[in-house]
Amino acid sequence: MREMTDHAVITDHVAPAAAAPEKTAVEIRQGTVTCSFPVQTGVLLLDAALERGCGIQYKCRKGTCGACTVDVVSGSEHLSARNRAEQKKLGAAAKRLACQAVMK
Image (cartoon, rainbow, N blue to C red):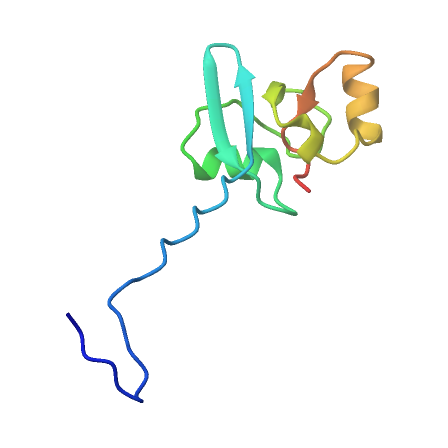
């Protein structure tokens, strides 16, 4: 039993750490290759995929060849709106050009 004094009592109790917030991710697929990575504001899908070692195809990086066309499996709400290059190359298809889609 502890003796009461006029001094402050320091305990060994430590409050539990708050759980780290779950990072939001984008998942893409090109053929048989599927890749997932955390959202990185201002980064192109292509750059994020290559950084993660995903073996997706690409060529021109301008949005003209279409080699980097991907399906966005999840996280499309974290991508920029389709630009003119994507609209011209993909039409109404529910796909994205990894070299043009920017994470927001």
